[in-house]
Length: 213
Image (cartoon, rainbow, N blue to C red):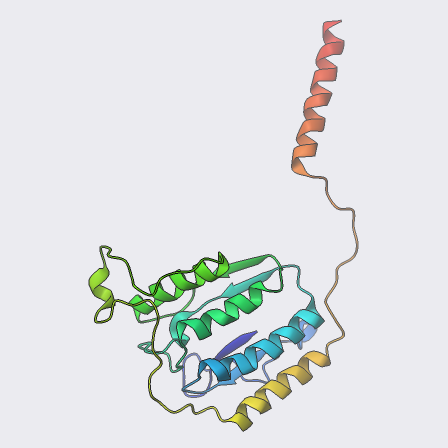
């Protein structure tokens, strides 16, 4: 599931009709968006589509890439998210209680990348962080306000309600058409490694006892 700027923007992939190939058709979920995405607009796409993905695909684990180039003020990105809006996706994914590997990603205003990943680590750990950044070796990078949270820019969101609704409906329709979670042939679950080691040690002790008799 990818939410990204699409159009005249590198790498030019991720059209809503790019849904995968061959046996994987339907399992690639692309939400093409345009400049100015706000917290509210982002959430309007992320939450319902993520709900349907969890319902249909039923993953045993999640890999969540938290690219920070969608934050307001990014040197290359075109979105306008606050830290709290960005981290709401992390919090929401965490709420499914599925084992999750959280990764970094893009982000070209370095001080905001640091802000983002520090804050989202706190969300994952259910820990409150103060808005005042403590003094550190890179304190001057966070001038002029030396605050953790970002204020979105005063700019137009080019994603209209109609365009967002169209993306949402198309993606939900795509997911509804899937037959369900992919499966593999059932097989015996391998025993725990520690149990194997204990059995091996016990067997060695038995053999040693016999040899000493």
